Image (cartoon, rainbow, N blue to C red; front, side, top):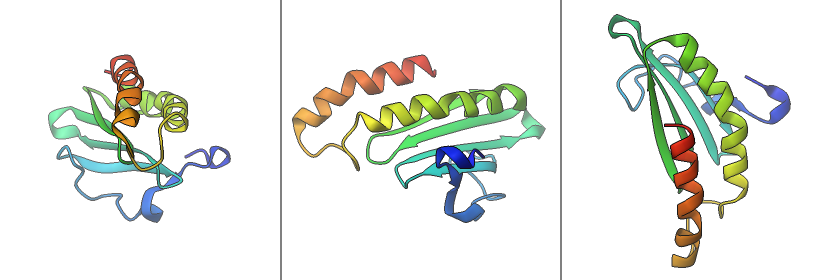
Length: 115
């Protein structure tokens, strides 16, 4: 966790050890200002590693890996890009159809970059 950037353990670490949205065990879960979230879950018995990123009201995007090293490197690499994306979107989701149209290319670019 990088304290200086504002990221902290999601829900104070309460989610660690529980089952994640993709069916693995959450081993790292961080949030930023209740707007952004990165979750790493794994199941070594099936070489399953996933990093799911979220922007509240806008995006939930899982990325799948076959090893922990690549997944954890991606977790850290996605933070700055997720922060940047979060600054370009209205907080909490689209308020108007125009918000949704304006956000479409931003969200697509992020998903393509981190697919």
